[in-house]
Amino acid sequence: MARKYELKRRAEHQEETRRRIVEATVELHESVGLAYTTISAIAERAGVERATVYRHFPDERSLFTACTGHYLAANPPPDPASLHRIADPQERLKVGLTEIYAYHRRTEEMNYKAQRDLPRFPALAEVIAPYLEHWARIGDVLAAGWQAEQGDVRLLRAAIGHTIGFQTWRSLAREEGLDDSEAVELMAAMVRCIAQGSEEDSAPSKDT
Image (cartoon, rainbow, N blue to C red):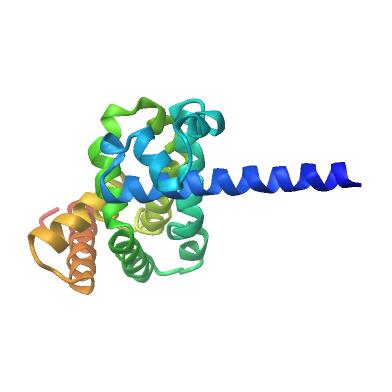
């Protein structure tokens, strides 16, 4: 019985240590970025030795996987399924952009530094591939419903993909000084113009 208790305590201690390492890494990634996060800094913040960090996470991929899972559990991106339930594509786009821009604002520091440092970490690109696929699904959902009536599907999809991007939001919010509601209205108007232009281009000429 004492042996089982000791094993349980040891497992709990190991799990607690792992959690501290992951939380410390996430905090550093958000504050200074991946490129400036060292194992020594992680160990110091987590209150462990460098060897302990390596014992739990022997390579970049294992550490990135744990940190990405931890961060996304606390900061889940918008759900494409809930947006899909909105029938009108214009309303769906505005609701979606409102949720997306609020998400970008909440996660700005992490997103900015992750995108800045991503080219230096091929392992991270592999780890976040499902996250990028999730955003592609959001774009597909927001593009649905425009295509049958309003023209060029590829052009509309590209425009919507641009509107949902973090860099688009950051440019509008930080460089142009728009609040999120203004940015939503501007991007929704852009998509409407493209849709209406495509529809007009495909309409028969009055002279024919």
